[in-house]
Image (cartoon, rainbow, N blue to C red):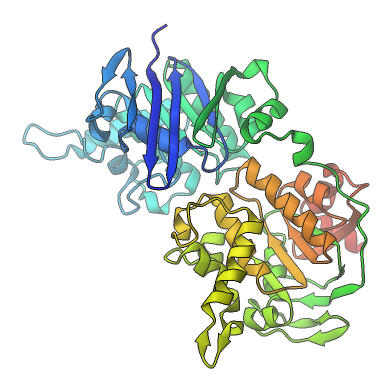
Length: 502
């Protein structure tokens, strides 16, 4: 069978780094070929080369058996049947669904004007081929993300795409929306369309994939039939570590004196929250979206005001009026949205890591640059931030390395309490292992950690105790070593607060 798409020996270098080195890949008709690897493994560079957005230094590409020259760009490759749905979707929010689907190749009347009626009819047919139905006259900006993604998929099909590259399509989906995505992928496969499916979620590889290719550090590791491997095999190929190390049960820590005490904290989103946190302890906070976990973290560091209750540090009640005061008192927060709240994208790695301690690194009004560099560079080394140099923009890093920069910024303060809100969201398996190992090191040194996570295995494997929240209340406190995921969910579902109060 002739591959729809075939690449051989692709190599791409940038100043200071080799993004791809002698990588080969192929895609068959009616196949879902998963592409996985850590952030920085070369996945994005590979798909950009395949789509014509980036030119390789060496190597060859063939579409349906016909060689494609290096000079053939995005538009030409799109005409040859290659379409990419990127994470940011590249839609125009002010235009309708139909206008987005046919943007740049609108059906025309005999007089050359846009045939709006025909465009809407064709758009509705394309949407129907995906097994879904929603109005194509709606503005894309008014639609929820799942429907925007389906719009982007229909746009790719409108170009008569034979090859569809889907870059992390499930990142913002869950529940029923994820089921719809899976059914769309299967429906397209049955039509003979070849799909390159990129995801950090290994469960999706086994749910959808026929074959899987693993990249590591810009190099090809292996291509395997999905039915011949398991999750542990994939993780070992990706990072050289086993699943057992990734979710290794922790425990037996030496928990010290109380550091933080929260009593009867109440706000419009929080209802009578009380707990304690000790040196050398990880206290997990579990719950569904909207349970109040992030609101609790924000209240503790003074980002959100609360109506009543007390926060005590080292036995002394404190009224924390903002993050700057929280840092001065020894509390640091790694926020849920690192790009919007944790980093300044136009600054370098070193500058971001230094933001939290600039006021401490001055003498006579001048920054002590040598001392500041020594402090931040030491933290960057401890975080194992992978970058050619520390003066490069933080926006150029992978998600996992960006998260390490945020961690470095928080640890630079010398905090006693570290609040981690979804610390591994959007990072690859390798970065997760490194963050888990760092957490273990920090608690061994006596740091107290409040861990908020939507991943129940993560909560159970890292925590000593777990508080479960539902609808703004703590509904259970559990020993992480004895609890199960089912135990957490039983207390997290709506109605748990009422059962706890009864």
